[in-house]
Amino acid sequence: MSRLESAGIVIAAVDGRCAGPDFERALEADIRLAADAATFSAEGVADVAACARRLARLLGEARAKEIVLGGRTFDAATALRLGVVTRVVPAAALTAAARGLADRLAGLPPLGVAAVRDAVRAARGLTPDAALALEHAHFRRLVATRDHRRAVEAFFERRTPVFTGE
Amino acid sequence: MGANTQTRWWVDAGVGYIVIDNPPMNVLSDENRRGIREALDDFRRDEVGAVVLTGAGDRAFCAGADLGEEQQLTDATVGTFLARGEQTFQVLRAYERPVIGAINGWAMGGGLVLALWCDVRLGSTRAKLGAVGVKVGLMASNVQLARLFPEGRARDLLLTGRTVEADEAYRLGLLSSVVAPERLLDEATSWARGMAGRPRDLVAAAKRAVNQALEPEPAR
Image (cartoon, rainbow over all chains, first blue to last red; front, side, top):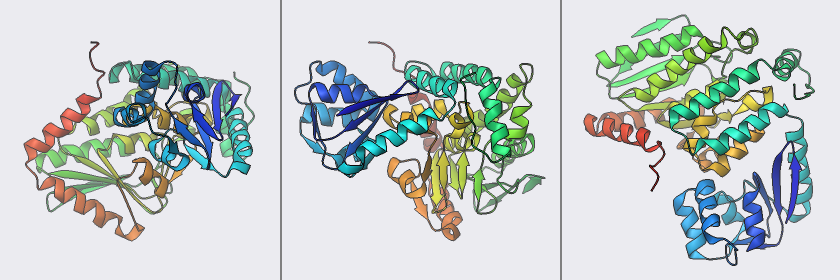
């Protein structure tokens, strides 16, 4: 498994067997990709409770229990179906796919990316009203940024914008 | 039956239909947001059992906010802008009868938010969904996606702003059914009539219960 960071977002690219500490590290990433021959298992994780909690947040309760309590090794196609990874590619294309995703993230407005990451992380612990208030607070701040204006101008001028995080 | 310059609505066999009609991409405006709210008021009087919401034409369900309007926002006006959008979304959520989104083309940005506040979403094979806010340095549909979906999927869609085509949307559960474009309204009607035919109090209670299930559980 390799980890790639871009714009503050961590991408895990899973190749081969991903179990125990590797599985835990993969789950810590923001986005996970896998090679078609990759396999996954919760067996051997250091902190079972933390792993279960993380999986429940990432996949929902039923799937978290299936993985942690079932203890089976599952293949990449199953990981995609369960939502453990969001994309599966042939092994030879994995590095390029992860790199491509990192480049795409790097091309997005950094303040927006950071706001999304923080708000998704916070959303689960908030009431719907509080989550909405948080989203609106981010929106108010972001709509006044130079990058947002650049994005809109570029859209109307049909060109690719360049962002600076302002 | 009613209409304004960007919205049409009517009732047929116990089902209310709303069409957002702001060509070419059906962007949100005061006019069509007001149309949606007025339509729901009319439907309540007519005692419809379910509502179908769709976009005119075959390009877009709703392409979200008008970027030109959004660019003009100032510190003084952004609050009103958000509140007006929110008012319509909350009306859909609080409406006692189920609302079915018939996603006939693009649903992006604020248009995706509108789709996500529908209780069930069906799509034509032309449906394309995207949480595109991040691409223009904004954040939208965050709350809805983070609550409707497990966090792993929400992160993928929100952080990349990527386009989800109909077949993937079906696999992810963003759409409950995908049919050919010419069959979309029939499919939506069939779902709506099914819902309208069930005991109304039970359906209303189920909708309310699911809405409230999104509240976090009290700490134990």
